[in-house]
Amino acid sequence: MVVRRRPQRGHRYTESPILELALQGWRSRMVGLLLMAAFLVLLMRAFYLQVINNDFLQEKGDSRYLRDIEISASRGKVTDRNGDMLAVSTPMRSIWAIPSDARTMSGEQKRQLAELVELKPRELDARLASEKNFVFVKRQVPPQVAEQIAALKLPGIHQEKEYRRFYPAGEMTAHLVGFTGVDDKGLEGVELAFQQALLGRAGARTVIRDRRGNIIEDVGATRPPRDGSDVVLAIDSKIQYLAYSHLKATVTESKAKGGGVVVLDTRTGEILALVNWPTYNPNNRARLSGEQLRNRAVTDTFEPGSTLKPFTVALGLEKGKYRYDTVVDVSPGRINIGRAVISDVHPHKELTVAQIVQKSSNVGTTKMALSMPPEAMWEMFDNLGFGKSPQLGFPGEVGGRLRAWKNWRPIEQATMSYGHGISMSLIQLARAYTVFARDGDIVPASLLRVDAPAVRGQPVFSAQTARELRAMLELVVMPGGTALKAAVPGYRVGGKTGTAHKLEGGVYANKYIASFVGIAPISNPRLVVAVMIDEPSAGQYYGGQIAGPVFSGVMGGALRTLGVPPDAPVQVAALNEDKGRM
Image (tube, rainbow, N blue to C red):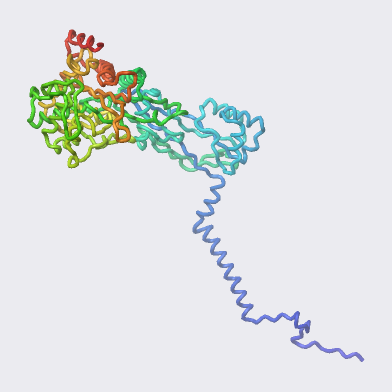
């Protein structure tokens, strides 16, 4: 008989302790709760991202197909006072690529592209080998070339509009106007000084692009570009050309290292011309040197020499120590100050104050200077703007060197009276001479056109002193003066020559700077012209011989250009012209 056992409750299907799974009840409940909590956290995170704050996911999605395309703004124009164009932006194209797509081009397509953008095939391959999503192939491509590239329908090659700066006046205004870089930002001259006004503001448009960079549609609002503001300079292109041509010819003929010319309107302080030599072509800057880039008239300083003597004489008149006809003993043509000796090129026994200017006497100027306190001379130089930046807003402008009067020794006061031991730029020297043209007051020099008939200046000398100095300066270009070649037919002119040794390494070298600064017409001054020739080496080096003829040519042409009526009798003008050829 078979006996069957009834299964008991709680029977285990295996009695093996290895296979037995025994989990306490509280642990199973904890695992369940943790899984539910994790699920709730994920659910809340999903709700937060999808409903409350979906910017992150939206941004990630937009980054795959939305693009903001910059709409270039046209840089403002630079013109002269009469509206003649000096700098203008012309439309160009930039060629760019998505390297991963562009690498699918055939060898023939790459060859055609390289030829059109003037790159060697290996240079093009190097640019397309980039792992970036965007690389420039060539910037500032002419529109006609860009159209040829577009017609090839090359994969991964795209175009954008941009501008290139063009300078119609070329090297004639290079140092004044300056130039921009490939990104249309000013690097030199007015282009840098007025960068914010000229630049404008770029616009933007948002588009949908496919992975190949093709625009499918515009989305969102378009922000239009705001073109830059135009800058109207004070210069007159005709006078600028006169100054440029005369300076270039003289520097070449005299085998000089360089030079500069500045023309100022005495009524407003406007800079009607500013040129330097050597210069450069801003439209082709492939081979530029530091010498070519230097704006000598603004950034270089020099010791002005005898062109500073009229200011010392004017101070003597202003202080009441001397009169126009006061006689000064200058014999025997030299004076000892300590162990130093100051001498005249041509010795004289006695000279009037007017003759001290006419004959350019170092001894006479020194005696006048030493009869006055150093503080008075320093204050005069300071009021004339020496030792301070001219505040043109021009890149690299300098203030020159003017030491504090408390540190002056007698020999230093003496040498500064005739332009040694003090330095300045040509623009500072030209501006200082406006005190003689404007009856004793001085106005700021301006790069921009001044829309006013006259500007109020800061008094330095009395009107009587200024008028007497004008008469003395006129003697300089007359028989017996040092600058017969500076005379201008048809006009009464006056000025002062300067011939100064160059200071190199703290020692005066056997090299010279020849200069001349003058005003005209004497009867009603309208212009100041300052000329500086650096290291003439063709035999002559005196200011009257080298810089005087440049002044004559520039001043005469400028006065006629402005329609200033002649104020000299014809026979006097002819006499001075003949003597100027001597």
